[in-house]
Length: 387
Image 1: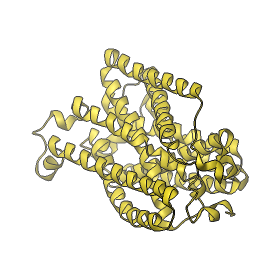
Image 2 (image 1 turned 135 degrees about the vertical axis):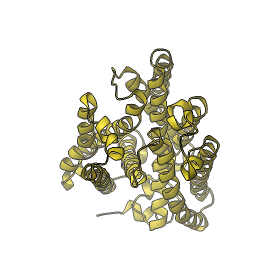
Image 3 (image 1 turned 180 degrees about the horizontal axis):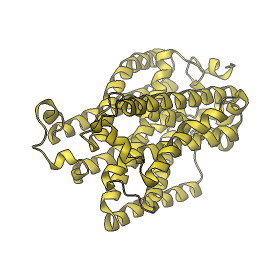
């Protein structure tokens, strides 16, 4: 364990490459503001929500481990803990959209059309107040969990684990409600005439499965480049593969439930959402979305051998992450561009930049503590884990 008294230091060349990629993303957005401003703002909403969700997925994964009393993931807990660092960057990007380009939301431009509770909920002051409340709750709980985890490394004992168990039990309820409302506020209200009662659960599924995919990729990378590989084995990867398989299928279940009910009811005010997304190139992307997020991962990860093979597991994790971006694109871009599709130079540039920023924030947080929580009482259970 002595080797883990020091935190991980990534090569400087890697940092330079990541900063360069993040700069490309920023330049793509600036160029977009000049040549296609509406697409540029929509893309900023997409990548910012993606960054925020990736950070929140890390915090959710950590909180679930505490609530369930699970010990199997303790050996690599610092990975999802460090993912939380991406959340403030995503929150900052969303604030820029909400404050400087409210025109992305049609209800902000047409204040007098709604009435009653609808008008109260979709009012700009209350909308911004909810944004602040969401951020304070998410970042506050996440920071508290990581702080206690780090203090346990310094002081030992069970007190910090007990505090995190209690905090996580509260956070699970708070997060479930607030993330559902946030996804309705920030994504569904782009088309305020359309509603879905399971839209929040749909986002929850997409957020968590993409978070698991990121954890898998980060662990596989750190296994090759750091001593963490001595503590994470095939059993851990197998369980992460099972989570990726399970929540990919859960995402598809919610996707189908929403689509099937709207298709079956055939009501104009509901079916218009899918009609817009099944025309021309968008219709092809609509099918690709299902293939990336569920079709291929489901078929490949059915076998135990696939879940234990790093190359296969990494490939499926990459597919899911690309699928998550495409899923967000199909939710945000069609109403912003009225269904028009252009060459995706801006989308690719900004997403590459967002991914680089995610890794940069991860590395900045990951190096602040030992790579393994050496004083966690469940660490020995994690190291001897077998399934």
